[in-house]
Image (cartoon, rainbow, N blue to C red; front, side, top):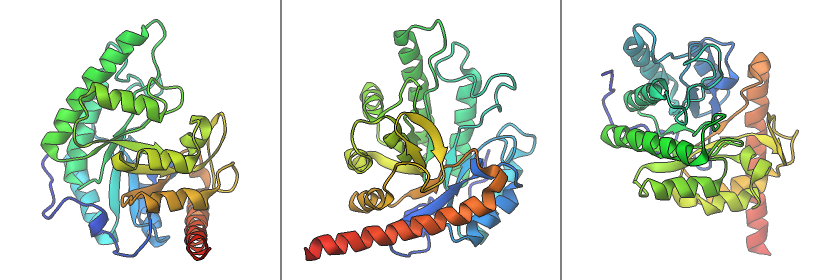
Amino acid sequence: MNTSRSGALRGPASASGAAGLRFGYGTNGLADHRLVDALRIVADLGYVGVALTLDHAHLDPFAVGAARKVAAVARLLDQLGLSLVVETGARYLLDPWHKHAPTLLDEGSAARLEYLRRAVAIGSDLGAEAVSFWAGVRPTGVAPATAWNRLTAGCARVVEWAQTAGVPLGFEPEPRMLVEDVAGWRRLHDALGRPPGFGITLDIGHCRCLESASVPECVAAVAGHLVNVQIDDMRRGVHEHLPFGTGEIDFPPVLGALVEAGYQGLVAVELPRHSHAAPTVAAESIAFLRAAEKAASVRETDDHIG
C-alpha cells in the first residue's frame, strides 16, 4: 500500500492540545456500525482518538481496493481530528472456523504474519501511534519451547517491518495466552534484544484480572515502555471486559498513575462485547473517565496540601 499522508506521524502532539489524558474508543465495541458512522460517533462524544481493529466489518486489509479505503479513512480521521492506534484482534478474519487462528504460535502462521505486515503498512499510512498485537494461545500438542521459538521468530519479523515503516509496536499481554502478563512481556522483550519501538500495550482490566501487583503499580512498572493503553473494568480472576463501575477497579488512582508516568498516548475504551448498545456505552464511558480523571486530580491536590 502507498497511501501515506503528508505531514508528521500522527501522535500525542497532534491531538487537541488539551491538558490531561487522551481518551479513545475501540471500534471492536462498535461492530454493528459502519466505520464512517463509528468514527463520527467517537468524535461527536468528545473522544480524541480511536483504536481501530482491522477486520471484515470495518477496514479489511485483505479486501479488494483496501488502499483506496485506507486513504478515505485517513481523510476522515483528519476531518474529525481523531488520532489512531491499530489493533489486530479480529476474531474470524483469517479463518472463518476458528477464532483468532492462526496465531504466531501455529506451524502455519503465514496468514497471521501477512495480517501483521499489512497492519504495519496501514498503520504507517494512517499515522498510527502504535500497532498492537499479541501472542495467541499455545496450540494443543505444541511444546512450550516450540511455541516460544515460533513467537520470537514471528515477532522479530514484525519488529523489522515496523522499524522500516517507523511505526511503534505495542505487544499486549493477554490472559491465557503464551504471554499473559507483564513478566511475560519482559521475557519477550529481552529475547528479542530489547529492540527500540517494541513497547507494551497495557490493558487496565487485565492488570486487575491476573497481575499480583495493584493496577497503579502495573502502570508504574512499565511506564518507560508504554505505547498503548486499553481501559475497561474487570474482576480478579475473570477475563471479562466490563463497563466502568461494574467491576472491581478504582479508576482515579489508575488514571493518576498514567499521568504520573508521563503517558501521552491514547487511553482507549475496550468493550468488545457491547456493540449492541455502543452509542450509550460510549457516552457513559467518557463521562465516567472524565469524572475519574477529575477525582484523580483532586486527590493529587489534597495529597500535596496534606
